[in-house]
Amino acid sequence: MKRNLFLVCVLTALNCFTGMAQSSTDWKTKVLGRWKYLGVEQFGVETEPNQANIANTLSLFDDLRFEKKDSTVFSSGTYIINETAKTLTLKDSTTGKTKLFYLKKSDPGYLIIEFQTPDLIRTRYKYELIK
Image (tube, rainbow, N blue to C red):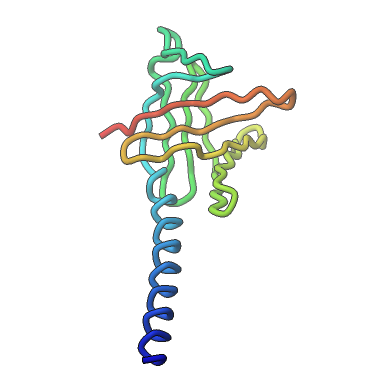
């Protein structure tokens, strides 16, 4: 009886660890793709894209490259995903500058990343996967 109980506990623990490993891998694959800008949220106020930024996109490729279009500015470079902190760091290949984003939501086809300025203003960017 004790042996069966021990076996059940071990199998349950292994199943839990397998589930955690899968969720972190899923997070990496969830952010890959070409994303269309849906708007921004700042101080709890949501703003839809206007004429200037309606065509904004963010593309994350599986070879750790990114391409980003903001209004008329195009940037590209590399990115790093930190699964533990759930962060996405974009490094522009032209300027060498980095930007750190926090992953807030990554449902299938929907992505919210948050950027915090040095004066602690948080801005959430909302994206939808382009199919």
